[in-house]
Amino acid sequence: MREIGYLSGGAGIYRRFPIRVSVANRGVISRSVTDGVGIDVATTTSFVDNVGLILESATYSTTQADLDDPGADANIGAGNTICGLDMGRVVTVAIRPDLVIAALASGAAAENTALELLSNTAASAGGTVVTDTDITEDQISGVVWCISGNNVGHARVCSAFSDNVSLTVTVPFPRAIAVGDEFLIVPWSCWGTGGADIDGGFFLQASTLLTQANASIAGGTGGDINCVYLDLKGRSDTEVHFTLRGHILNNSVVAI
Image (cartoon, rainbow, N blue to C red; front, top):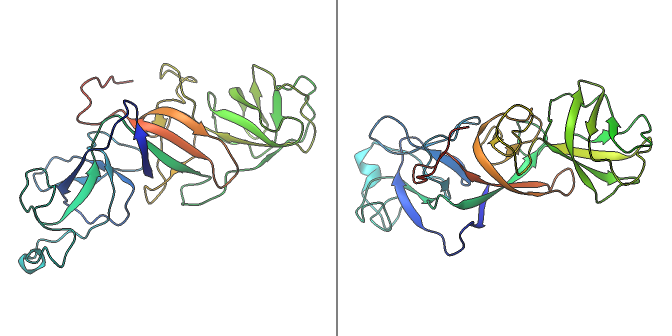
């Protein structure tokens, strides 16, 4: 994951936080925990009480000798910490609560998995039904788009789902859907109330290493977000852009 901008514009604000565990990958969401040691990384399904996006990796240590040479260790020293003094091993975090994060959409829990390709197996003259046995997750309120066939460049919201059979859109694609036309789908959208089948804009499940977004799961699954934009491209370069609803500096957090 990476920072790409701020809803209110302006420059980023960065602070270095002490850590309570090793951070293996940069570009992961942080979280606050109940002890007084430092911050942790989020889980794949919960981003509650986060302080923003961690921008570097670091190894946690309680060994005194490991904490004695800030000149040789980029992850210690007083520079830009939350108090202006050395705090042991730290990581840099983008802390503005209006941070917009971009995450690559992965087709499985594992990073860099191509999105599931839906190859239509039954013609739909009205342009409303995509049929494929690979349709296996309830992604109602997610967005489906055509990458090959009669409707390339068009996207619609999924409004109905039949397991291992088909998905349906209420607003038809502009042209008939032919056998062999190819589509992709993600479980996100950019609006809704958070209720059943209108929750695609508010939840995201991270990949196993927490660096990407798992697009293979049902809609309404994962940590609390606000979806800002869907950069719908191909199977390996589609992104979701979002803000974090559970940020501890967000004074207007509303539970959904």
